[in-house]
Image 1 (cartoon, helix red, strand yellow):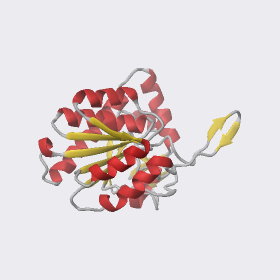
Image 2: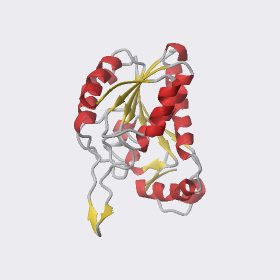
Image 3: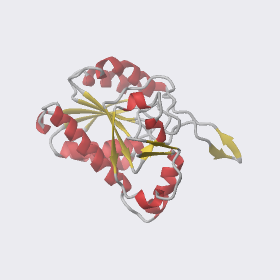
Image 4: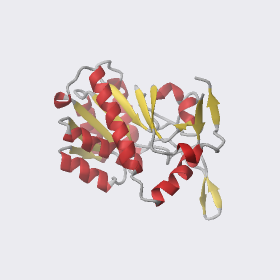
Length: 243
């Protein structure tokens, strides 16, 4: 059976590990990089000839993508970064650039450059939005404030423009934790979503990956163990699926 947890449940399980200084992002990025290498192998593209495009958002999701990009670049891949958020995960960006990756553009420029690069890339990595976006509520000045997984601005424009290119059997789309635009708890889809061939999720399956319509965008789901099993053992999941 597959247990699907909420984003909040997974964050709560992560909290003591983060407080203890455990490198959860490094574990996640290593698992992500391993899956990207597997996809390149399936495409029969050697690492030294491979081209990988990172679509990077503002949060830790983008950080996971950047650290994975650093590992891939150090292995000989050509790694391009399109910054599509209001900021960037600075340690991840430094690691990627130090390893040889390059930023092709930010904002609207990043959208245009991403489309150009995607035409000859092998793997597109969707690291725009993760479990920090969704319709789950968060406290704000004592009130419950709704959140949305919908893409906005350059991120929305980039995904809309890349959907036709991503459909080619000559390339793969790898989503980081959840496909951007899919609610991690409910599976609801808001606006444009880049369908993934494989979604690499961390720590536990997110319920939104197992519920339609989100499940239809996730492709194959790969779970990367980052050590949360004992923390979630006695937590009631949002849903259980018989595999």
